[in-house]
Image (cartoon, rainbow, N blue to C red; front, side, top):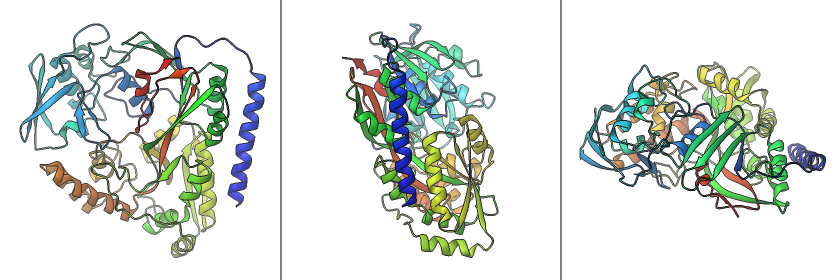
Length: 495
């Protein structure tokens, strides 16, 4: 009850403060012709070989075309090319004759595809995508229109691995990260400066500006003043509710696949104990958090891949909210239980952390919240400087990411097993997946991985977050994607 009252007070305070600020800031210049998207953080890179943060991944999708993409169930579909499997270890990709040229007018050819993938496979490049492509033994241009991949072993998932944006061969050959190389995506980059990027839609010349505004309240103010035309996600529910009442704004909402979780350092003497992790899972009332903090714009999750994914596991049973069981588990640990919980400095994420802190305290777990700017926070997580943290996996489509996250050979910097999870059983399953010859054989293996990881509580799963966009009334044609991408910018327009 106390948490609900505090949340209501916080919502009321945020809305009142927004109304006062809006009144004080009335006026301003008219919105420019460009459509302006307000974003919370700047992309770290414009190079698809190095894009791992959400903003970079979303941006390079706009600038660079890919060989393959995904359908709603996570299966590979053609993008730049269609493929045939000539043998269990041989694939041929034939480029689409109607494909878009690079932004500098040069035609994209098989040589560009070969150069991009060879660059990623070169250890000297240091691409984080190399581990997922090590199955490639050779990549060759058969002719200008055809690329041949020779694999070291059969891999039915191979087409799903080829979602990397294709660079011009000259840029890929430099190895080091490039900024602003021409791509063949739906947009070209016109300008990049601190806090702002200008893109041009190649189909019709419509300009789109990405404007970095870290504070969500300021983003909303700029939207209401016409300084922004569109904001997507990273908005507290009370601000979304406030915007719903504004006639100059429309709200779009769609179910998402962004998976939020609590991670643990499994080498830590305390968080390495499963009893502690189960106590945390039982202490958290996810339904209450979704209902009151998210205003229903999320749904409890059990696994990284949603149940509708072809390799998902709809049979996983949740760790039900059970404070009595949590208290018993805490008592079994002996000494007082004190945890450090790292999160970003985003106000809404801090609020979620504070509610989790209060719920854990009721079961005997004292939590100290440590919030940092995104760069410091993410750096600490990658370096293993944490006991417990919260993060989200954004836009996961291929189950191959499970090896990158959970195999004992994927400890950083070789992968994203940041919790230092080690399970011979899971390693064996993931190795078996690497040897599987068909998708039909893979699905039960990945479900077995889900069951093992879920039983071990390497993560405490929290929820899938909905995607929410707020648009000026004069903006139309924008569509939300389940993975939270910015692909809707390809069709957005002014009325």
